[in-house]
Length: 328
Image 1: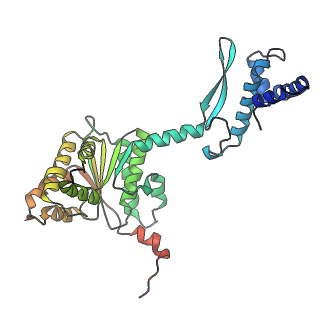
Image 2: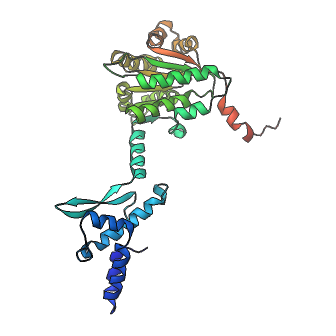
Image 3: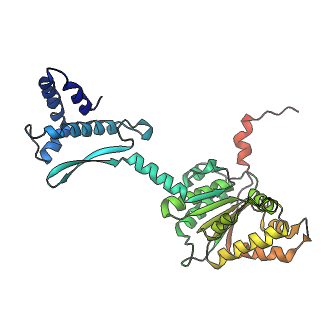
C-alpha cells in the first residue's frame, strides 16, 4: 500500500480533498495499534493531524513485520528496520530501529569477521557442533568422544596470560571430517565467546612461501604476524606438503615458538600420526633427513597439544559415491 504521505500529496490537488482526508484519517485512527499509541501519547482526533503520516507508517511497518520470515522478505521502507514510537519532551518521536533479523545478520557477519582463513575452502564456514553430532554414526564411539572433548575445550580454552597454551592435534584418514570439526570449534569460539581465530591450509601456505623467494611482489609478512598473534590458530593438513629447510626452520619453528611462549593455542589437523609427521618434517629434498630439526618442532606439538585420532572413515568418498561414474 502507498504511504499516506504520498496519498495526501495527490489528494490536495483534488476538489474533494477534505472529504477524502477525513476518510483516511478515520481509517488510520481506528487501527488497533494506532489507537494504543494515541492513548499512550494523549493524542486526540483534534491534535493527531500532524502525526497521521508517521502513525500510518508505524501501522504498515508493524503489519509487514508480523508475517515476515527474514530480511529477504522485508517490505518496510527502510530495509531491515521497524518503526518505533518514543516520547520526547512529551511528544511522540518516530524512529527506525533494526529488526531481529537485521540484528542477527549483523551479528553473524561480525562473528564471521572474527575467523580469518588463508587458502582454505570456506564451504564449512557455518558448521556447528550440532552439524558434527548429526554426522556421527552409531558405531563411531571415538568420534563421539572427540566431539564431547572439543565442546568442553571450546568452553574452557583461555588464550594468552590466563591460559596454558594447550592446543589440539587432530589426525586421521583422508576425508574423515577433521577440518569439519575444526570449523565447528572456531564458530563456537567466535559466536559464544568472542574469540578470534585463523585457519590456514598449510600446503598452499607453504607453496606461497616458496614462491615469495622469486616474486618480490608477494609479501606474506602480515599474514605470518597475524598467525603469530591470533588467539587461536588452526594449521590445517600439516605434513601434506614437503618443506624446505627455510620454511621449516625460519617460519614454522619460530611461529610455534612465539605462540607457545605467549600461551596461544595452536590446533593442527593432519593425515599423519605424530611419528609420521616427525619423519615428514625431518626430510627435506635439500638436506635429506635432519631429525634434530624435526625434534624442535615436534616438541612444540607433542608437549602442547591434546592428541585426537578420528575413525578411518572417508566422508568425502561416501558423500560423492552416488555422483561418480566408473568405467573399467
